Image (cartoon, rainbow over all chains, first blue to last red; front, top):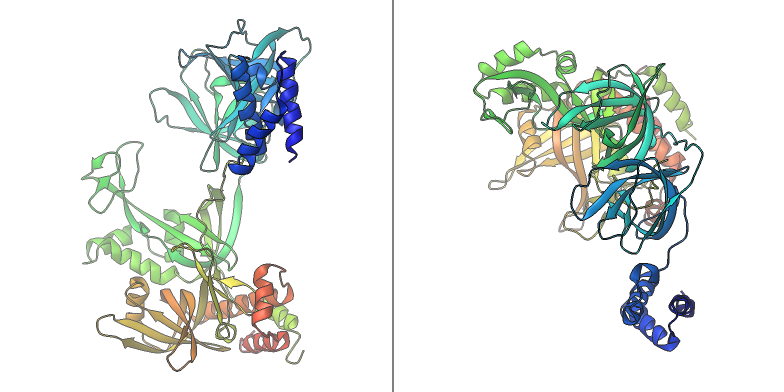
Amino acid sequence: MDISQIVDRISQKIEAKGHAADKSKIEQKLRRLIEEFGVQPADAERTVLYDIARDFGIQLGNAAGPGDQKLINSVSTEEWVTIEGKIVALGHSPSPSIAYSGIIADASGAIRFVIWSKASVPVIKKDAWYRFESAVVDEFKGALNLKVHSGTTVKELEVDGVLIPVITPLAELTAGVASVRVKMIQEWDVTHDRMLQSGLLGDETGTVKFVTWKDEGMVRLEPGMVYTIYYALVDEFNGRHSLNLNTANILAEEGDIAVSSGASTFQGALVHIAPGSGLIKRCTVEGCNRVLSRQNYCPVHEMQPKFNYDLRIKGWLDDGTHTIDTLMQREVVESLTGMTLEESRELAENNPLGMDEVFLRMREKILGRYLRCEGREIDRRLIVNSCERIHFEPTMLAELLNRTGGEVS
Amino acid sequence: MSTPANGGFPKRENMFEREPARRVFAGELREIREQFRDGTDEKSPSYVLLPTGQRCNRVFLVGSMTEKKRQGEQNMFYRGRIADPTGTFFVAAGSYQPEAMQQMARIEPPAFVAVVGKPSIYETPDGTILVSVRAESVTVVDREVRDCWVLETAKATLDRLDTPSSGPDSVRATEKYHLDPVAYRKMVYHALSQLKF
């Protein structure tokens, strides 16, 4: 990095404000930061600029320069940018220090924004176009966010024309804002008083969970219907995405979508069976169904003298190159082990080892065996729908014998 | 649409990945001499380097347990010999592998067993090098599972021979071992020829 270039840039900005810039002093400050303290050149540039700007009483936002005008999908974090776009969502301000929060979009994409109360901005209206000059991009939980602060200039623009949002396939979602065309495939129980609806949406490429919180004008989706959802918030947690529809415009559509079943098949040896497999007890509180501990303790509903028995196997299937976590539910466990739920329950009740006896017997029947499992992969775990043992294949033996090249190769 | 993904948010890289169990014949495993750790942390996984050029933290093997011995008084553990068509695996299970130890206690050799475990290299006081597998589980299986394993291990070994990766492990294996591909193919052929159509 050539320090003299940075010196020139800084002095130009200072001179543009009508102050004299002392180049040698700037260079000295920069060298100290970069060479002595190992500061990244870009950070050093900003620090020095801020220092000098403060000395001269120049307003910081402008001192840092407005930033290049960019398309929304090309901004990156910790950057000063100028963008022009349409306000496609405007939310309630969650705090008195925030004047507005919402989503601004252009033809390339959309981004969340926050306008601080300290920023002097005109009244912001939904569906109007604005120019945000020298706003700052930052990142929270993987999603980019535009901060409009006291140094940002906001101007309303006269723009005619229709903004056509880009539709993102579910498999390509990233944290931020996205428009999707989906079919509502499952409605789930709401888990919170403030929640209006939650469930699963799907398109040809995959599925995603969604949440709508109770608010004025919010609508419920109908299972089986197809919707185009413009400008939903995409959140990410542990590598999984979910859509928050509160900011979105939702349009019901005709037609149907062949939703990807997400079905996948994996075969390999069952190399480990995890604790918590075999015969388990489940909480009977409606909508809970959580697994009880040995002491009949539910993590949410505490002691539960009553419970339902169930069978499941959590195990690792390994093909020598990859290992995947699998979860088999009752029907699969019964057909694979030949032990029914009823038999397992009797065995546990009449045996000194109790439920452990079921675990041990199942382990002896299936651990180390070759299995072919078909199911849905969710969150890197295969939820197994069907499972069968793999048998010896003489045709494979013939192929491999040929591959070795015979006895003398 | 959507904002760019260049924020560098750690997505799935940090999530725990279980080490796959490699399929290796006894004839290859007894040749290993290289053992290393990936990283300096106490919990960094340890690997052995296979002569065919792959690092290996865990193995899955199926063979006939021909012998089983209980050893030690205070720190009791089991040792077993497990034969495959190419040689013998030495398997051990101690108090840190309670599952495998309890399983081994109940097995009466000879029996076909499936073993999941971690290979390591030991040097005896007289300088002999021993390769042993510390078992995580030892389960009695039938002959068909053994036959499937021989097929699968033959395929895995041929794959390693036929598509040598150009990665650092492969380079290191070439330096450390004098691999004779012809001998390995013969070993695979010999193992396969013991199976019936």
